[in-house]
Length: 247
Ligand SMILES: [Fe+2]
Image (cartoon, rainbow, N blue to C red):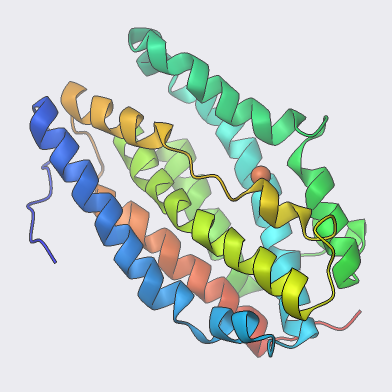
């Protein structure tokens, strides 16, 4: 792996340096997700069709909570980082589309509808998905997001968003496993076909932000923000393996 130097707080990168660093960050994320998520016990068993349904349920229950809350945090980030998007007006449209899509497609209130559709096939109802408390080990990913979305700078947040790149292949593997081994129709597994497209605009935002100024809190480098999301995603999966859920 490349040993590219991390940008330091207070620096401004040239367009070339910013592009190279963002490229490095995405490659690093991808490699890390491969080790921690794709090669992990949960995804390996899911792909083989040997992941027990109660483990799958526990994961999806906690993931549902997380996805609802992180979409709400995305809406907050529209306000927090609006000045950057006003300065970079060409990015405002894609940013709005990204936030809105989660909330209005296929219709309002948005992705939560497809989440509940896939949950129902797993044997989970709306209360279990949206109101039951998180497992303590599974809530960390949301609490980390809350910390970065609310307290963090724009480069911390778009460093964290690099994580989304790992969800495209992840969704595809879920969709294939559910429709191949678990008796889900394409319609039942709809949550995972809705999330298969990667969001390429994130790269552009981060590249642009690094050219304006690299600002992050001590201990919250971009690489840390991106990779910690993978660790906490893996932690949620382990929490599900340790606590199978039967309604
Ligand atoms: Fe979504």
